[in-house]
Amino acid sequence: MISGIHRPAKLVIDQQAIFDNVQQAVKRLPADTVLWAVVKADGYGHGMLQVAQAAAAAGATGFCVALLDEALGLRQAGFDQPILVLGVTPANQVTLAAQQRISLAAPDAAWLQTAAATLQNSTAPLSVHLAFDTGMGRIGVQTVAEVQAAMALLRQAPFVFDGVFTHFSTADEADTTHFNQQVQQFKTLLAAVGQRPRYVHVANSATSLWHQACASNVVRFGVAMYGLNPSGDALPLPYPLKPALRIESELTFVKQVPAGAAISYGATYHAAQPEWIGTIPVGYADGWQRRLQGFHVLINGQACEIVGRICMDQLMVRLPEKLPAGTKVTLVGTDGDTAISLQDVASFAHTIHYEIACGLTMRLPRVYLPYQA
Ligand SMILES: *Cc1c(COP(=O)(O)O)cnc(C)c1O
Image 1 (spheres, rainbow, N blue to C red):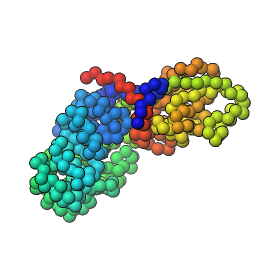
Image 2 (image 1 turned 30 degrees about the vertical axis):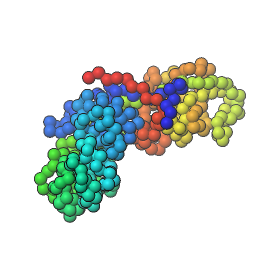
Image 3 (image 1 turned 45 degrees about the vertical axis):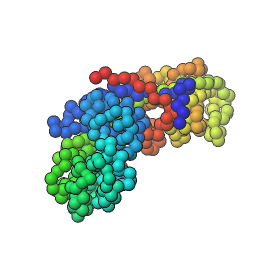
Image 4 (image 1 turned 135 degrees about the vertical axis):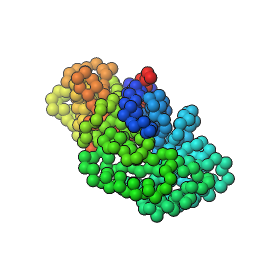
């Protein structure tokens, strides 16, 4: 995808915010626990390599990604730390992981069997973290018998049994009933492993913020690293996080329209009176979803409503007065005394900030503010 560098619209990523968020989290960890930065999906839209760099400088000692390709991207860029692929890698494609010292999640014994066959002629062993499904219902072994079947394979070549992990589905909620059930099931399955592997991990951002992690020694730190509250606004943060992302643009065109004038596709908006309308060169092809019609942007510290349908590449706002083309527009970030957070955008769009951040396409150029260690 072509990045629009000759268009006044950009995503500004503050690497210092990422650095500070990681440093704060590392400081609060018990001495035997490490933080691995979750940089999947291009660092939640923030840029995988730039996030990894700031996180490592702030004390992250490893990385988690979702796909083998993301792990290979980190290796290719020179990151030498432990990397864990959290998703299921096709078991007939594990040789690359072994060669590159990339750890893979194993979802069950059948996967291990196929992986072992794939690795028959591999000179390098494969580091594996066995996934426990304790109530997320996504991947992993669910019963003691399944743990034992997996362990029988894992204790042998071509595997290095490096870890076990689980993932909580409600760590960001006030009601801890399901969370506690998952903790109990984790303990049951862990007991069936016998000798513990080097890494035992359960905590995503939410778990690290709001729960005492149970006997684990890695935190998989994702969304909080980007300065976002994992719960949206359901639970208060135990310490402040710094949002790392802003979206900035400019008015590219300004006009006055008469009362009754229609704006954008479908003519869904009509000016109530003579109005000043500004055009902004951002649309749903940038990840600014059509359902954000009626939401607002910030101009000169004031909220301006998005009027009419959001187009693929442009959108229109109602201005409080005549403003020159070139006037700065903030879609996410602070402007004077006002601010729009990714959570505000997500709330309006009836989704979560994770989805808004990941949905920002590569057409919006990423501009980085460097960190200082
Ligand atoms: C994405 C992911 C994380 C990170 O979650 P956050 O809520 O962003 O902290 C941790 N563990 C697993 C298994 C994941 O898939």
